[in-house]
Image (cartoon, rainbow, N blue to C red; front, side, top):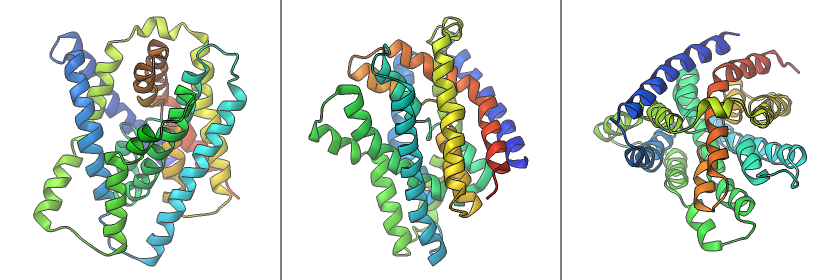
Length: 307
């Protein structure tokens, strides 16, 4: 219950910053093009540093074992999400590709990082880094094939070796070989990491301001996809992960990550591969709004599950 309350309070803080992002767009302080630049900085600079710094912990055999468990948990969560989305969203549904990718891939970077950092600190970010690495690998393989219906090895390889995945690889190597960066570099990198929450929510706010929120809220189909993404898939994942009786921080980190709202990746892929980008954006916006209530609820349910 304590984690649910903390997460709810953190979501309030994040939504206040999100509102500031909306105001910044409405008052033309941040343009659509400017938001795209901010998003790239966040995705290609800030997030990789957050991931890398997450692995800057003193090596212990116990943490080493949990590292690989966190990778396994991330894979399990995504497999469950893929299976459920393919069962619940048939090919006969219009824009089924958009709905499936939205149900599978969460906003684990923009929303997940600040939530995990607030709840569990560096240990949580340590496990989160593994999740984001798995997320990126699957997004650019399964996600790419889902949205395009084909396999392009060059695109897949480029996606797999994205800055976030490279940061995770470097971080894991530094952790395993007990390499700690010098104090001044660590302090500089930490300042970059501290930019994540405000920048992520401003980007989310500006993105939301570009959508017709009232129109999106009237689309009943959106709520079905959001129910799958925000409640059904996370709760089933929580039951599955709790069976392992692993460390609570490790388990809850994975559950929270899969319970985050629809990722911006769905909109990005929709634009890139000529799918319904408006619908993808609406799913992103509505799920982000609903996550203020759904995320604390999932955490509360997960804490109640005992085996």
